[in-house]
Amino acid sequence: MKVATAKEPEGKSLDEINGSIKVPQNAGFWRTLLAYTGPGALIAVGYMDPGNWITSIGGGAQFKYVLLSVVLLSSLIAMLLQSMAAKLGIVTGKDLAQLTRDKTSKRVGFILWVITELAIMATDIAEIIGSGIALELLFGIPLIVGILITSADVLLLLVLTKLGFRKIEAIVATLVAVVLLVFSYEVILSQPHVPEILKGFVPNSKIVTNTSMLYLALGIVGATIMPHDLYLGSSISQTRRVDRSNKKEIAKAIRFTTIDSNIQLTIAFVVNCLLLVLGAALFYGTNSSLGRFVDLFRALNDSQIVGAIASPLLSMLFAIALLASGQSSTITGTLSGQIIMEGFIHLHMPLWAQRLLTRLISVTPVLIFAIIYHGNEAKIEELLTFSQVFLSIALPFAVVPLVIFTNDEKLMGEFKNHTWVKWVAWIVTAVLIVLNIYLIWQLVA
Image (cartoon, rainbow, N blue to C red):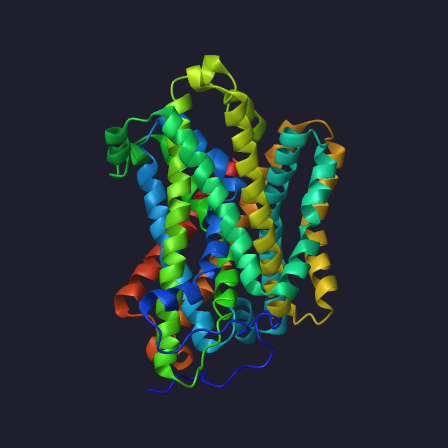
């Protein structure tokens, strides 16, 4: 069967980098994988951004290692959805935003754009606040100034784009490595009980019967799957130059892009596990208040809480990791904003103006909130909780079209989802929708 979209589509996703990276022909496995490695790192940062930190560390502090099984489940769901998003982009030559807009009316497309734009804004809130607080903790820079500095990374992104998308991939991968190394070191120092950690990966009935544990578990699942990552994944999977008239080339691209994505999401899984283990090893049973980044920063330097390993170094490393996570996430958030604007509303304007507009839209509410509550970091960090409402609302509007499109034989040809993937995807989608409805109800209540 012929692939329905072998012809190159008009209006390529992220046109300035689409198909910009050559891949070797008739090369070995490892050389080919190296050529496809990179987009997965940009995807992975969305699954370990500052918005997930407090939830993961708080989960360990409250319930020790029990919720590790929830982190594992969330990561497996992420791998499934991201592989579908990448396949959609490679086969059709369009991203999720473009296809959603093509299949809907102008009015519906506009409504979906507004919802998705709110989700991007909500995602950026956690990343910008996290980076701003990290700058304040490390250098004493006022939070408002830190937010402005963080927002300026859009200029860095413009420069890097001119140098090539591989430079962006390398920088983000380096920042991810910093986060991984910092928390690996801190967990080693905390000397967790390994048998208990392994036991935590086995699902526990207490998660369902304990209301507080269930709420936090739902928070981990609901906040882990980010809608903007699905749009991003469907776009940057097209950065490799693929001959869409050749089925073997398409199959190869899908295979290696999925491997890259799964490797990087495994790293994100390890980081989230490290965060939860750190919370359990250092804070379980201490009755410490860990609701804010500042609380965590101070606790790591408090011997009454974490014992003999407390030191300014631990606190500084935490802040460095927070800055690395926030900066890498804001870079990918800006790319996602561009994808959504181009895909949903067909915005045509100079690249610098488009990315500046994208960043202004997302940073404005954070700045207003920071100005109103100047000097009150606790109040500013409360904005993180409210941002999850928008993410919960927006998630089905990204997941449902993704499942529909990748199940569509006319659109995907022989690359449509296998039967087992189709049913698993719909079950996962239904579960995510129910969980997010429950989270919204809990937050409103």
